[in-house]
Image 1 (cartoon, each protein chain N blue to C red):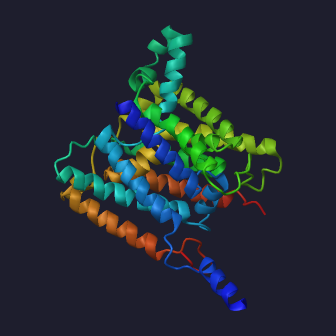
Image 2 (cartoon, chains in turn red, blue; image 1 turned 45 degrees about the vertical axis):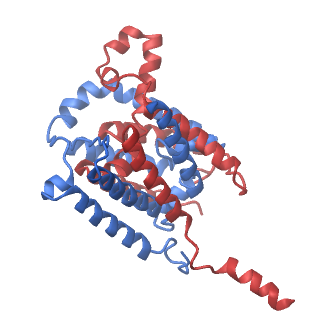
Image 3 (cartoon, rainbow over the protein chains, first blue to last red; image 1 turned 90 degrees about the horizontal axis):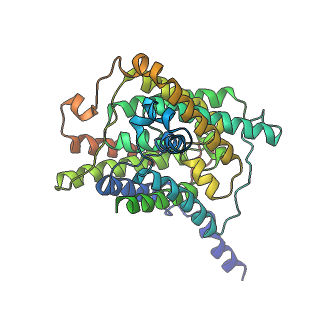
Length: 179
Length: 180
């Protein structure tokens, strides 16, 4: 009885042959990314933000929108990329719903300085501002530049990835971790 | 039809990001602090498979919709640095915050709001930024295969082997007992 309990317990504790999630999900995402290039083009997210800004601007201030060269350059919001962003929302929702694990915390405290929930909202907002400003300046984000860009061997994407991880690791080091 | 493909790719991508934990700002910060390499390994595996498969498909005669981003050194490097600071501050990417909303994270809404404002401010400063950071030192749409004068399939194969070897050798949680 005791030995069978130990035996049934053992594989759950140490199963070196089990494929880790990062590997299986990475292979699946890699195949998806290549099929995306085959179907319509490389995956990318950050361009949808200015295209959405453009769509709203054309509705509320058409003259200003027509005279904003960046909005004109980015074009219509009706693109496969915009639908991809809608898909991210659905995919996140479904994966969470179909999972047996506990739901994520509504607000996750990540830095020592975020001692109040309000501070967390501020850092998330400031972080969101910087990632979009930076991504638009560089011409892509984690998906468009790093995943798609490096997959396509683009020289610019290697520069972008080095800058992101260099600045990101340094900033993470300077901001104290939650104790 | 391509709109539908976009939606399907997005649903799959959102599910993979949620399952690997990349939509968690705490997981992102642990990766940037090199305490947990799961997301970095996930990305490197994705790139390796995507790269080799894309160039194999192309070599097999498929019409691939490649879209190489231009190498304007100043804007790409500065934009990447700004992105890196924001990434460490908020723990979100432009895509992972959308996934985060899908799985019920409230701070992801703040990240999206900041992102929309960031995109709007960039639109306003574009006429200043373009002549200063985009047009100078712009080498156009170049790949490292072109720089090396090598066959892209060969370069993709080498990149895939190097990335997959590194992720296999590195521990997922440095400093702890290596399990995966």
